[in-house]
Length: 65
Image (cartoon, rainbow, N blue to C red):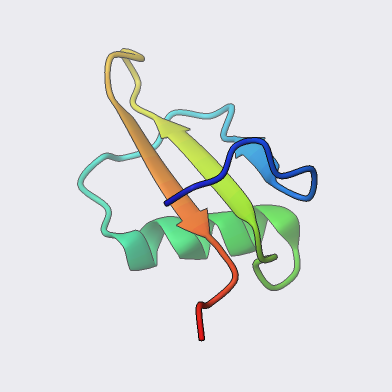
């Protein structure tokens, strides 16, 4: 479950259109290249297609033990 009220949650929006055929690994690679560093915990990456009628969310959270 994603807790949107968490103050440490960061949301990143990709401004360039993304190929929606990409898998989660491909989207994670785009996010890593954009940030220039490893992916942070408690982050949501938002990707839109060219027509802006589809959305993909990539969530990185703290692993549960």
